[in-house]
Length: 340
Image (cartoon, rainbow, N blue to C red):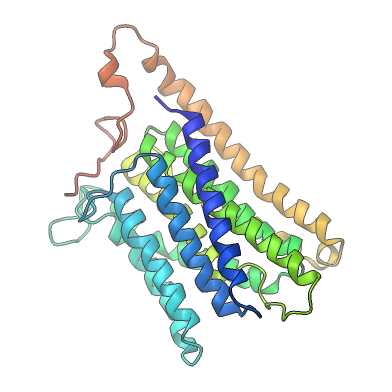
C-alpha cells in the first residue's frame, strides 16, 4: 500500500541533497558564470534524484527493463549530458538550438522500446491506435521546452524567475498523484524525487540571488539555469507518458498537466508584466495551480468511481487488487510494459 511518509521523505532527501550540492559547488568558484551554474545544476539534480529514488528502494538494472527505468537511467542522464555539452559549445549555437528538439522527438520512442505498442522492427502496431499518438507526443514536448526556456530568458527579477521551476514542481507532484490514482503506483512515486530536486534547485537559486544582492560579484544573467527547466520538463513529460502508456491515465488529462506551466506566459501581458514582481509571481502560481487542481480532482473522482469499490470488495483477493510495484494494476484494456 502507498506510504505517504516515505514519499515525502524521498522528496525531502532529493531537495536537501540537490540544494546542498549546488550551494557547495557554487561556493568553490567566484565569480559564477552561467555555464558553471548550469553544470553544477546538472550534477546536483543527478545526485539528488538518485538518492531520492534509492530512498524509495527503486531497483536499478541494466539494461532498463521498462519505460520508467528508461526514463530514469537513459532519458534524464541524456538531458544532463546535453546541457553539459550545450554549456561548453558557445561556438556552436545551432547545436544548442537543435539538439533539444531532436531529443524531445526521440524520447517517446525510447520509452516505448520493446513494449506492446511497437513491433519487433520498432514500428507502431496497427492494432494499437494510440501508438502513433504516443510517438507524436514529442512535438508538444519540444514546443513546451522552447516556450519555457524562452520565458525564463525574458523573466526579470528573482521572484518571477523562480516561478518557472516552482510551476514544474507543482505539475510534477500533480502528475505523480494522478498516475498513482490511475493505478501505476511506482510510476507515480518517482514524481516525488523529481519534484524534490526542482524544489532544491529553487532554494539554491534563491540563496545565491540573496548572496549576489549583498556582494559586488558578477551577477549571472540567468537566475534559473537551463538544466533545471530541461530536467523538470522532461521528467514531467516522462512520468505522464508512462502513466498514459502503461497505466490508466487519460491522455487529455496528461496534456492538461503538461501544459499547465505554460500558463506563466499569461503574465507577460503588458498590463500585468510591469506590476510588483511578487504580485506577478503569485499570479503565475495561481494560474498554474487552477488546471492542476482540476486535473487532480477529476483523477480522484475517477478513482473513487472505478478503483475504490474494487479495493473494498471482500470477495476479491488481496493479491489481485493490490498495486503492483513495477507496472500498473492488471487490466485487460491497459497495455503493459513487457519490454525486457
